[in-house]
Amino acid sequence: MIRVLFFIIGVIAAALSLAWLADRPGAITVEWLGYEIKTSAFVGALAFAALVTVVILALALLRYLFTRPAAIAAYRQERRRRQGFDALTRGLLAIGVGDRTQAQRYAGVARRNLPNEPLTALLKAQAAQLKGDRASARRAFEAMLERPETELLGLRGLFLEAKRGNDNGAARALAEQAVRTDPHAGWSANALFDMQAREGDWEGALSTLAVARKHGNVEPDVALRRRAVLLTAEARDLESSQPAKALALASEALRLAPSLIPAAEIAGRLLASKGDSRQAGRLVARTWKLAPHPDLATVYAFAKPGESPRERLRRVEHLASLTPGDIEGPIAIAVAAIEARDWQRAEDAISPYLHDRPPARVCALMARIEAGEGNKGREREWLARAVRGPRDRAWIADGYISDRWLPVSPVTGAVDAFEWKAPVDAIGRGDETLLIEESHEPPEPPPALKVAAPVKETAEPKKPELVSPRAPASGDGAALARPAESAQVRPAVPPVTPVPPREQPAQTRQKPEFYVAPPIPDDPGVSSGDPDESPASLERLRAAQIR
Image 1 (cartoon, helix red, strand yellow):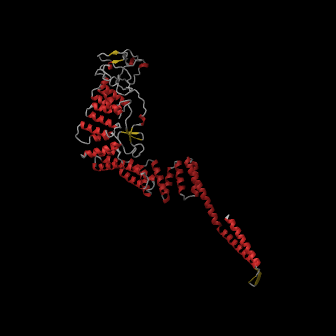
Image 2 (cartoon, rainbow, N blue to C red):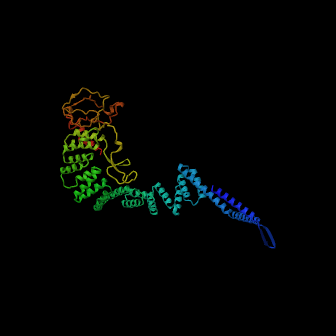
Image 3 (cartoon, rainbow, N blue to C red):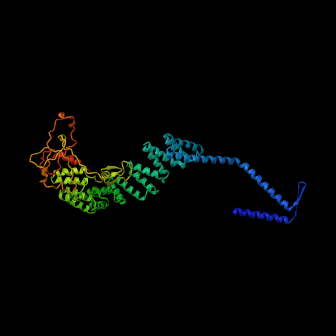
């Protein structure tokens, strides 16, 4: 619109100028080289305008002729550039979908049209990787190291190639060079940190973590937690050789992460060994409030050397009162009470957890209580229930269950991966009958077990019976508290005469997989010489306890 307006204004101005000249006639005389030219002012003005126009057109033509070669070259270069970037786009898409043939084709086109483009070198290297030509890929990445703009890209490519070839030494060296080249690159700092932590280089991992935190490659709270874990790992390694330094490291770790159980355990143990039992108790109690754990209870109980088991029981009771809703407190009390031989106090501590399906540790503690009171039958039953009971908490990371805390996951190498929790595979497990092998040569079972009328047990020992015991359904301990009189009545099973193996028919030679004694506790009908009450049998049951 503005251009049209200016054009109209120009036409009007030209028309007015010509009208002004036409209204004022005059003469123009030009003498040049013996010639004399006379004309009117109007015609002279038109001739001058035509001359200027011709000059301008001539100059434009000459400029066009002189600039054509450069313009043609620029056009061809721009065309190649467009073709090169189009090849880069199509080649990267081909690599994304795994089309090796198209990737190599477009890599060649991009290399011809854009030989100095960084993405061309990347496309070439990735096409070689997709083809499986690792030597060509390494050469492509090494060529990137010669240019500052592609140096970091080449280091990353060589690092990945070294990781694929399981060359951890070269991978670590490349990661260190990448960190020195550009500390802001997150992949290099994180990769170097993971490798140093997996190799147990705690000092190097702490330095790398500081660099990553300084340049924003890790969140501040995550960095503090990782630093606490690394300090705890280093303190554990130095606990026996340099206890003073280990105590300082563990104390700093607790300052950064007050709920870190291993740090509190190490610091409490070292403080107790120095005789500072009060400080050790306060430190352990503070962590216990945040994360109860059996190791903390042990350190707290033995914080004062020379105390009697009764005194340790009182200390543990105070510790358990700090977390009234957690099962670790009653379990710690039960353990201390068993060591003090206070069987009733131990049973009272874990009695709220005896209903339904008590955990394996609770069942094992009940077995120790019954053994301390001399009830071998009940001890055997609680041991059997411990085997099939729900699994207790343990240190778990990436599906790996460890007896102790580890700073690095042995599966993935992740730092601070272990958690104190119950295994997932134990959730919802059904209550199946546990069969315990009591004899290597059990009698052959009858085709069908028919229950006869109950009869009174005699004082003489009876032959073992093949039964399938089950735990009490309610789990409230009712089956364990049955009167001794009711334990004397059992269904009789018709005796079976075993046949020697060489005389048995082919269809009856297969022996039953397990032989189980009756689950009635404190059965007076079973003599002390029977194998189900032997010490070896009880040792096998105790070995089946699940932590």
